[in-house]
Length: 117
Length: 111
Image (cartoon, rainbow over all chains, first blue to last red; front, top):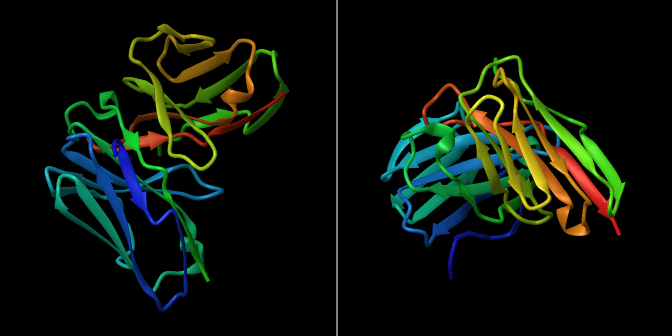
């Protein structure tokens, strides 16, 4: 399998549940990202990991907890979410973060469509 | 606050027509990227423009970066149903790792 793979593709959870989103990249990249895409807002950066170190936390509520055990895997742990957290969560990777900002090419996964009831 | 406004927000056209979508800001950007996101998929990078006034072509797609590097346009010639998707522009944000996305134009090409 190649590219960036996200699982699950769809997730429905209650506000008291705990769930995790998984992302895996097979591109040999060193940077991984979580983005949130809502129907009425532009794509929002949540977290950035560069060589397994978190380099950006874009004021994300603590009910979202990222984990990056190695450069190929990224998780987003979810707990006590709110209905307004329903969105498409996209994972992306790039060769390296912070070397030139927008000049880096981002490769996105297909996303996890999350619904919080 | 940086903001990338894209227009129109929605566009529905017949196959074979031409169209232009815009990405505008009051801020100057060192470069801008354009992505296309097809239904059920993540965004895919189409092009990066880095020089004011630059024009890049990708088959039927023509991208232009404004002279003042505050805006960009995407022109599609003879649109095809496969062009259907959400078109996003993006530029560098305040952090080194921060790619800042525009509001998007959702294009539908009707066969």
